[in-house]
Image 1 (cartoon, rainbow, N blue to C red):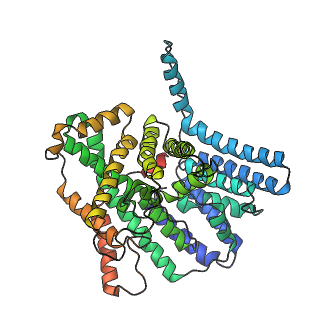
Image 2: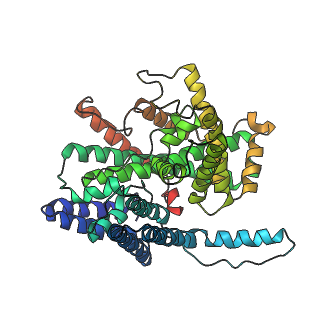
Image 3: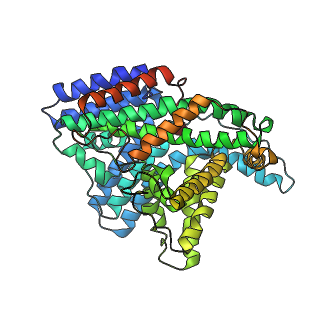
Length: 478
């Protein structure tokens, strides 16, 4: 079920009314309703894949109980291994099986042996990369005795399948989200209103910005040999806006909808395109995944505490794994490695934590230096996105070669003027609100009632009359 679909606009009010009026006096009934609603939400796409999420939930629930029941090191390691093998094995089969088959055949071709690999007819379950990482964090934290396992089966299953963030995050930690299923939740009007504002802004980003950019991005990337360098650069810039507004839009809707039910999800994006270097960008982009890899891969490997070589190795591993997590294609690995190349010089110069606050804090406009830093970081990000969007490494390299051709200084062949105006207004709103949790956050009564509703109706009007054709969320494929 898509957030930007008629089905969801019918589904959400029904669940909301049942949650607060039919089950409000029983925490267990609320959790049961969340679980049933989440399975309906997920099963709307393909009910058969509900079995996967049930098995994943059950496996880690039992592993958690097993870890609590024993203090023997070998038994605890075995149980953790079972969780890792089960979750990563399931993820590997559905997401990477054909990739490994084809890569194996290509490797053999270097030795003069030609193989005809047979692709398996495997459908990638929506959200599998997200909920497997969420359950893995539970078992790892229980194994490390950072978190006590739960015996409440319904609450645990609801935690794994919580419908707002089930298929594209944020990837929640058990220590942050699971306890909320055991706390009495009361409807708070101010929290619900702010959640609706955030969800509205997320829907605007998805429907108006991302879906309109998608039309031009698809045209340019599908026919890149026919376009000038300036048009190809424009395509990369539009894709940068598309993927940001598509993914952060989903996160805003997920966080906002969760607040309607009394839940708090972690922030997943913090205005990343206002970053002054690539280290700051990665602290602000897909925060739930970046911190997951930091805590469960980078730090266990030693982080940056060892030698310079070890720090470089660990950085390369994390960015490579992060790229591979996004998809079964060498383009994603290349995208990850390119971002590592961007990041490593900052790490070596010990400047990777130079910018921890908001840019131009307390000022309306950035300084000339800050403006140049933001532009440079955004350009580097756009160039890396070419690998993320291109179907093959060859296409990405040829696309980049096309950008840096003499025609880079020509007038773009695809130039939708109204879209540029829309993007400029969007960037201006996000810039003004860059110190807030989301762009429609209004603290107290600092904005008068008529002005607030003028903004709401303006955003709604734009969604209905300027929104592009319905597109599936990009991260559903991951």
